[in-house]
Figure 1 (tube, helix red, strand yellow):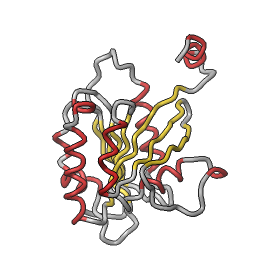
Figure 2 (cartoon, rainbow, N blue to C red; figure 1 turned 90 degrees about the vertical axis):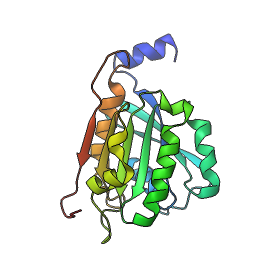
Figure 3 (cartoon, rainbow, N blue to C red; figure 1 turned 60 degrees about the horizontal axis):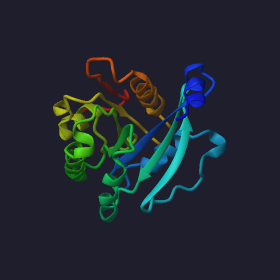
Length: 203
């Protein structure tokens, strides 16, 4: 970013751009979430499984997000690590109705957290416990327990219950991400951990 760009951001004339990695297993709802976060006139009507990765953009009140929507299919997950260095934040999406595959999701999350390009960085992670509209869905608190999120001590993280199709829970997650990314890295802040529940489900 050049001097004029930096001045524009400081003066509020231009939104700061943030590179976000959107990760999670296939069929967890990653692409649907990113699509829902875009302006209504830019949203796709037909959501197809991501092959490899795609790049999408959306904006909050003060930030411009460039999102690398990474395929969660097994044969493409090895591509994730090639983009870790560029990522300034992570969105990790979980299908809260699929307990069997949550074990696989935890394995992928553990691999992510232990990667040298991620391990020693205070990179914020936003978790969406998605598909809360489904009958078998468990709460975001239960998802957190199954993924052992309480063990993440050196990164700010937040978990939101979400229904990507209706858009429920998405804006609160983006608001948290915006507030966390805007915190200057040179300052020492306590790790921010928060849960958000949708009211209709119990653990």
